[in-house]
Image 1: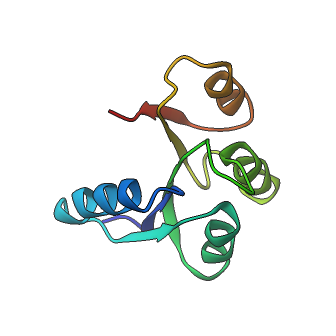
Image 2: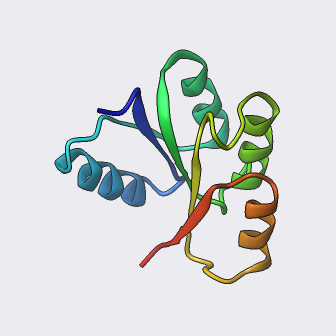
Length: 107
């Protein structure tokens, strides 16, 4: 049993809801955020075991969210999986370099 919920962060409401439903069906407790700032706020008040983070978001990119997270939590304390449409982009490499645990390419 995970220590906390899974946090799905994506500016696309459809993507967020589909992924949250799939994870909930598998028995996970799921929180969602539509922006980087909303995600950071949720992380302040909820126990989260894993973050699934979109890279391409307006206002605050996934990389910016990742940088903020890594200021206080290591990749072992809070795993972050990047979920992006860009599978082999320089952004993905940059995300891994900045502390993402791994990445998943959106279908």
